[in-house]
Length: 364
Image (cartoon, rainbow, N blue to C red; front, side, top):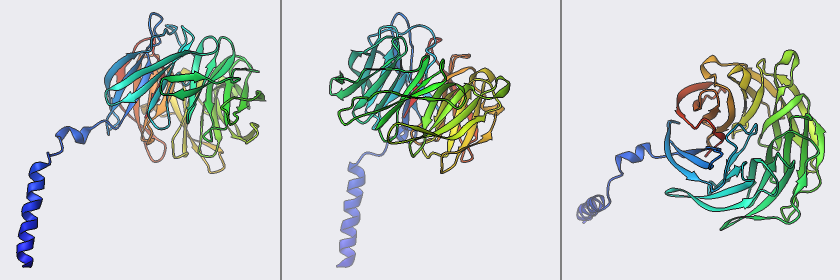
């Protein structure tokens, strides 16, 4: 009886195998994620999407017009295009037409859900947390907030705030979503804003940067932020500092102006495990790696890796799993790709060409 039952089960299993189609060979090389940049064209802006393979390689996927315009020149910012935490949205600035484009992510790529005024002039950086989006307007020196809806973005009443500093470079939500930080290059200051339950930013607070020309930044795991300082160290070299962002919006310095030994550290990426901070040293065509301790302190681990050198990088992003780093290189009009080692080292991978006016980069 037992033998008969076994034979029946075997026949049933074989039937299932026949009825269920085999996994396509292409599934082994299925897309692991995407990388996005902006054309920033003055005659028409667009998001360019690249499929990211399991090995980190990029393949052009499609180009999606925003309906707005760019500037046709560098934005001098970090975060001109971002993805939502859940990967369902892509938000991009139209610096030439003073608006923001919201794209829904679907199986076929991106679908333009809507475009809305940025609430100021010359938007250069955008950030998102949950169902909130904030934009940094360099021309009007303001920030403005929006709620994410099924049709794109809806302005939040009372969310427009003026900056205390000047020469802004980036805006970003803290990991908790309770505060915003803006770096100001010209005044070497950082502005912070506490965000209330309605999503509206409160009055700004200003803090002096540890070093001069704070530019890009990224957060670690516990609301500590790592900020690049393009001219933050002696002899015209650059540095990185770390701060703890407190619940009241105040900043506490952890590591002040740790030298990169390189020139013009402008962009920062932090791996999602919070172990490594990477600075793009634009004038040195290099990338430096800092180790981040549990208390948020920084130690320079790799000052310059010649094999990882980028060419006048103008923004950086890591994949969601932190296995890969992508650098937008203005010198070669390329996206350079690197594998991130367990020790924070970088191994160069084949890159891909982009528009000469490209700005911003995001990865998921």
